[in-house]
Length: 188
Image 1 (cartoon, rainbow, N blue to C red):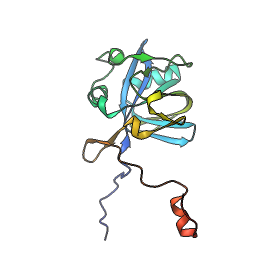
Image 2 (cartoon, rainbow, N blue to C red):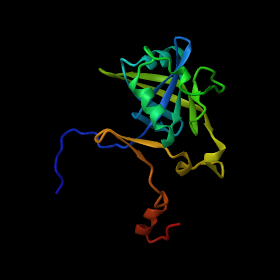
Image 3 (cartoon, helix red, strand yellow):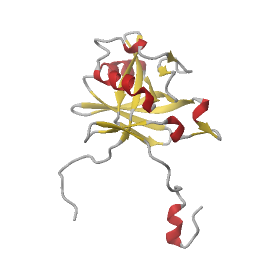
């Protein structure tokens, strides 16, 4: 029997990303685990209202999402525990820009997305920045047949309950195929 543990959001682990924005004329990055997909081309970042990065996203109307590999755990965690108001995080990583020109991306991130701000959802303690993915940049080392290979990316995952970072496991079934067995079809 299941036990009711209260109103707990049990969707963790979530991918850890660094969101980038220009704030006060310089690149700033914030560690974010509250990132999601609205549609195939639309993403959302949930950030507490007090974060320095929020102002840059609102002013520039662009931001980046950088999928961080597990070997950059120290830098990624640091970007989340210090504020851009007090620490210049523009020197933490080599920064690069794409066609949007105002969404700083991390060169060492195997996958980075440039996003144009579509909307800001205002909640009591958080803002949700909804963005359209305009460009996705992937290091050639993580591409297999033109598609991103998550095993090669080695993305970090965040677990709020245990306050731990996790690594991605292995693929074990094919989407839109495994369920065919219940229809009497062969998977594959």
